Image 1 (cartoon, one colour):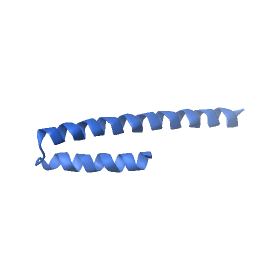
Image 2: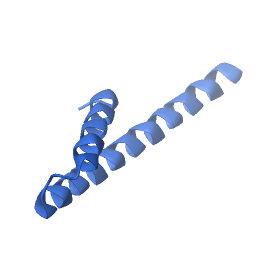
Image 3: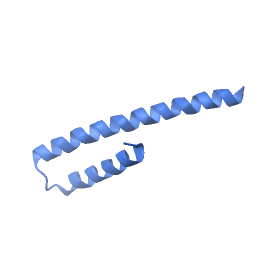
Image 4: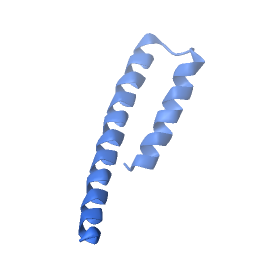
Length: 61
């Protein structure tokens, strides 16, 4: 999965949960899925920042 798909899925989950017509179990499942997606996105952003920093350091020399 890439970050764009993860963000789209997070938006879908947000819409589903906002409707309010889902069961408690569905809410918990969606919450767990969203937590995993957020963790993935944060990790991807962190890794991307490190790569950018590395390139910045190389080109500043």
